Image (cartoon, rainbow, N blue to C red; front, side):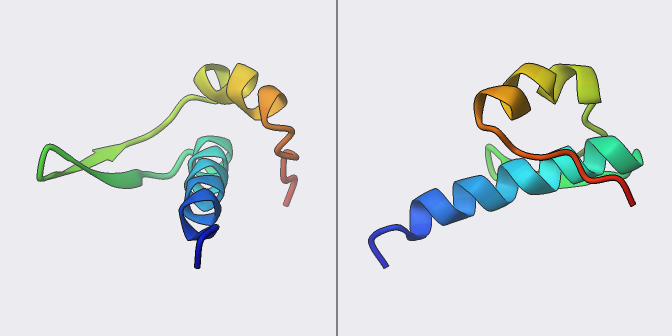
Length: 58
């Protein structure tokens, strides 16, 4: 359980990357409000390389 936070962070980054690749919405809660956004791959490019997340080509 002590690594649960790190796992959730990795899962969120992966979900955001997949949403950017597929042009689908990514839903988050910010300041108690549900926010839907479509992330841009360009915005995540540096972050995905920094964290070595592989791109998925389906």
